[in-house]
Amino acid sequence: MDATDLPSTVSWTMPEDSTHVSIVPHWTRTEEDTNTTSILVSCPMEPKHISIAIVLCMILLLGLLLNIFSVWVFMRRMPKWKPGTILQFHLAVSDAAICPLAPFIMVYFAKGGNWPFGNFMCRLKIALLTTHFYGSILFLTLISVYRYVSVVYHRQDSRLKQKDFVKKLCAGVWLFVLVKGAVCAALIGESTVGNQTVCLNIHQTNNINVYFAMNLIFFIPGFLVPFSISLYCYIRLARSVSTINICHQKGKRIKSKSYKMVAICLVIFGLCFLPMNVVRTVVVVVKKYFSGNCDLLSKVETAYYVSWVLSSANCCLDPLIYCFSSENFTKAVRSSLRKIGVRIQTPQEDSAGRGQQENNVVAHYPTWDITDERT
Image 1 (tube, one colour):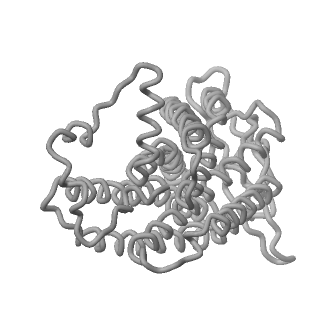
Image 2 (tube, helix red, strand yellow; image 1 turned 30 degrees about the vertical axis):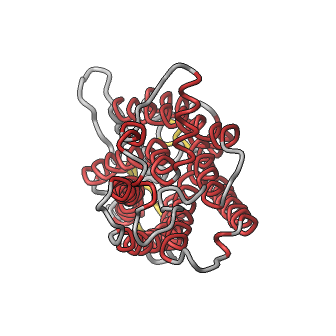
Image 3 (cartoon, one colour; image 1 turned 180 degrees about the horizontal axis):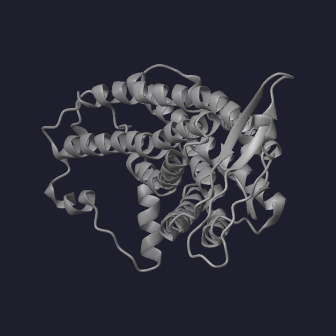
């Protein structure tokens, strides 16, 4: 029997008198020309462990609380905004945008990968995920560039130090990611695989070419270039911070907080965004060129969902950046917490009685130190 004798589709069946799955390959036949035929094998969908959905939803719900609180602090407790404040505010909004998806994702996983909410909600989910993912990357990159310019070139004028210019940059980022999200939502929607309705799933064979092209287009400009820029900026920033005089308590505190801030930013890129981009690339390559290797496809699919959980964790990590990069934000948070009866003892308050001479002894840097930036 040659390829032309194969049926175009064969479903997976389970005999009623057996507890084992009787697997019949699902063949999809694509005519390349009049003389050749390529055959793509579709593997059965396997439900993922519910723990993935539980952890993901917990992260998104925690991220929602943290970012709503952060947005509230920016809007209500910090009336005077500087360029750094503007960038951090837009990052918080970008993080909060994905969090309402938590209940929908939980139901999706709980139903074994069956999407019950319709095509419109599927496309909305895709648009929000895309907007959040690339919006967070770009705003983090702008924050790293702004901090680099503010510290390394603090005596020079720069357009990044102008609020109007930064607002235009943020508007441009939002326009870019919203258009990207809309394009992704227009190209990809829900589809039926076997007897299940799926949304943004690698088993959507009809979308594999779209997935492959989108990943290729988005990977370099959407992740690799921003990550390289951020890495360069933070390396230079760390070198500048290393020159701070640590003979006094304030110098030690500034240096410690600055290194923590740099570490958090690099962890966000390395832990949250790098695995997702790498694993997603592997997934689309395996699905497109090795679709018959069901065991390999199942493993990379699991890795994809794990990387998805990691990428969502940036919603919870980004608020740490606000605390380490802006003393004004930290003070506003402490003030807000005191109003509800929560008091946080800070190292600054703990060492307040040790003398005031350390307040003016940070060598090489003026009082706008990089952990404050007067944002």
